[in-house]
Length: 314
Image (cartoon, rainbow, N blue to C red; front, side, top):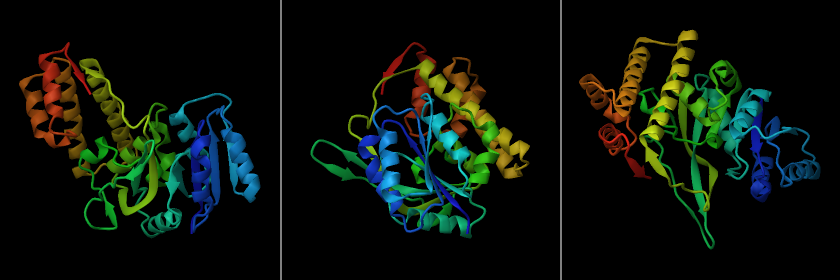
């Protein structure tokens, strides 16, 4: 039986932190390490955590304090790579874990050594002034554990938040040379596991994923430049992931063919948005239309091709 680390990233999260810590402390399988990585909080978060540790005598819990704020992406990366467990559970500061989460997910990982990232279902809940309501995310298929066979879409679209993950620490360290500071931890772990064929979904809801009414959605204006920046982000991410596969000699014929097609599709999209597209680029985009997130997305690309100075409200 391997050892387990929970990585809790905190920043000014005092309001909901005790509820989360209660759900960690009462897990049916206790972690061997809970590492709280605080990103220079100023609201008493660290003091609350230290008081909680002392109150319950939690000798396996420890706190790392950043001397200055480095941002949540770098903070999670630092915490995950500093952990000592064989399995790592990233943890957000304001969620609530099912008390069986560690027990159930670690058992799946121990029984399935080919899985590097296992993602459970989550139950988002939204808080308003007078109510809390829940929505469910659907599990693919009817199986309790379902492997995602890389098809491009699974790489592009991260379908679970990091708090739903159980990760092999060896895998997290193996991808570290390609893990840029600008990459969110959940996107890195999901996409690298997806492209290497080691990502699976777990069909139980084991995290209540808090969404704040003030921040549940953002509205803004989309331009050709912002759309291009999104595509450039995917191209860069994909380049890193494919290089990882190549260096680790994990490219088989099917995976190589799929990655080449996805690379061509992304670069064709970029040329369309940049106003440099040929007829061949439009054919490539049409052939890969299933990789768009919605049916409207190719129309947005076409809109900016025809109207490079246009603006869309989203």
